[in-house]
Image (cartoon, rainbow, N blue to C red; front, top):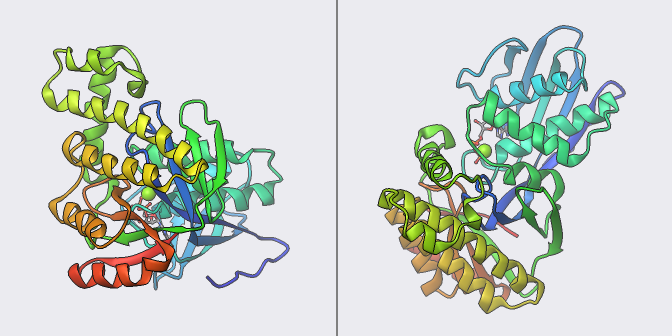
Length: 350
Ligand code: ADP
Ligand code: MG
């Protein structure tokens, strides 16, 4: 990533991409999650303007986008930067519009939270300019509101917390309800390798929202927002449709697996971490039904070729897998996996 120059009237800030090691679709159901920050990241430079325009240039796009602070999301790539700039003004960090310059090594639309990284980086740059007293957690909450309310993406709080607070090489055990968190180092013996399946999805494409609605139906039935805390026996005994019971059961078992994975990481128990990851994939495939046959095949081959554990990561229906691989076997493993799956590509290792 090139280093954007700081000038007196501008500020720059960075945020990393993130991979979720375990804990999928439970950040809006009262569960714990375990994301880790990647070495790939995004940097923005923000220069306030004295009119209401937002001019966005990015190294991923040839054309500069010219927007107005009053506009709503229109499906353009600059929507995310516009929404973040609007939020910066709403928080009183900038008085009018801004020029936004973006440099990024985080691929977009791959489940590595490029959108959260962009919004958080813009808000952190604006905080420097406005000398705002907002904490990183407060900026993460504001960044989630941009995704939910401006972009129409029904995501939870995990991505924004991870990119606002975790640094590359660390994992974050996050209580998504209380927003308490603990940061700790990843194992040195093993790499957590992120491989893109070659299948892309958008969180706004409907299926992510459909899962969220199914969880809402379970919340209404059980009278709680914390599906992860339900007793499995009460889920099995409920009159809910089988699909909704399965979604709810995934929340409960996935939360338990996250707790197992956190303890395993802390005690360097690679086998227990790997088992939790493998069980998580089965639950996402069979209970939350958010995988695809091509992703199941990638996960299965990742393990056959020597990964200790592997699972789909992110919102599902495409995107990336994350595999736990001994560092000394990583290169050969990756070469063999990519030769069996020509559409797949290496993204990053944590
Ligand atoms: P992801 O899984 O990467 O978060 P999203 O679809 O949620 O995927 O977010 C991608 C959107 O975020 C892009 O359409 C764009 O609006 C914005 N974005 C991310 N990275 C960049 C970038 N480098 N430059 C400009 N916009 C970006
Ligand atoms: Mg996103």
